[in-house]
Image: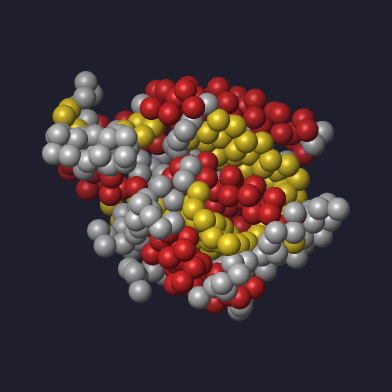
Length: 356
């Protein structure tokens, strides 16, 4: 029989610097920012220093989790690092984190690059490898510094994006607890709605790709900056999220009323509110976190989870549904029964410094 697996501990790390609402009012104007805040619900966002990588933030989250729970690094035999902003094109950044964390040479390591969806995908990989007996204890890390690829005069993205990281320990739990089901999906026809056009092998970075242009809304960017078609992403999300939630609940013979907490990837407050209304989920059954940190890409979902746990909203036996969606286009959902053998969430700390 496959082993039951679940989340045993979490932590998160945020850069020290805050890009405030008032600073962006000066940059983009008071009226423009009022409209952005009304839709996004994001007032402030955390921004990493230029010499800080996503892996630096992930290291801080991981080392905090290991130290707080006195976990022997040699007990970790699977390390997954979720990032869209790797240290290098190669090697995989997970190998760099492996060395920094002092993990065993018997630990498997690799990266997962899937934007806002990558955390739930990584949980499915960790669950599958532990259930199959390939690993026993997985450390799932997320970390991105996406603000570095957003043009500072892109008023569509600057007010939304933040930097951050998380660490999650996944391991064996009692039968009938932990992860109950996963639902994963992809629509590659929309890959161009959210992308960084230049800098890869298809379109290497050149002086031409660095040329800045303004779009019809006045947003300035080059092909070396992050691009998002906001309207297309919104339509995608409201099209795939409700049926995905309904499908995974039906697989488990559950209804919305049977779930204690719904944790969505939080692209913005307007989208979240729309999805809650569409699915008939009371606002009291979800948790909103991004107002003072921004949309931290693949770290957003685990950060919402961690903040909810710190707030006492996750108790043994609770049914929790997590769903994320984004780049690719991709989406992923999981339902879990919160296990009774968790180690616990790492308490909130002071802002962490830069790289070691």
